[in-house]
Image 1 (cartoon, helix red, strand yellow):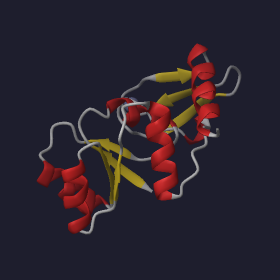
Image 2 (cartoon, rainbow, N blue to C red):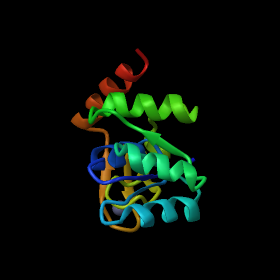
Image 3 (cartoon, rainbow, N blue to C red):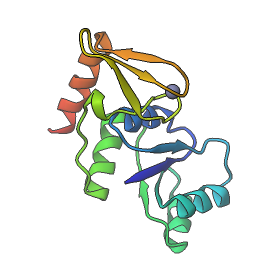
Length: 139
Ligand SMILES: [Zn+2]
C-alpha cells in the first residue's frame, strides 16, 4: 500500500516512511493535483480536510480522514481504515527525508544508508522513542 499525505501531515510522512511505506508529501499540491497524484500512483490519500476526503472518494480515490494532529491517533486511524499492520523494522524502512528504500551498510554495528541522499541511520536514542510510540499503537 502506498500513500500521499496532505499538507500539515509532514510528521506522519516521516513515520510511514520509517515503517516502510512508500509515502509522498503533497504539501505543495492543490486539491485537484493531490487527488490526481493519488489516482495515478494508486495511493491512499490521507488528509484532515473533510471536503477533500469527500472529493477524493467521488473521484474513486481511497482516502483516510484524520481528526487530530496526534501521531499515534493518526497512525491508528490509518491502520484501522486500511487494514494494514504497522510494524517497525529498519531492514524494511524508507529514508524519512526522501522516501528511498534504505540499504544495509554494515551489521556490526547495524547501519543503513539512503543511496539517494546519502543519509545514514543507526540504532540510537530515537529507536526507543519509535518503540514507545508503536507500543501505544497497540493499546
Ligand atoms: Zn534519502
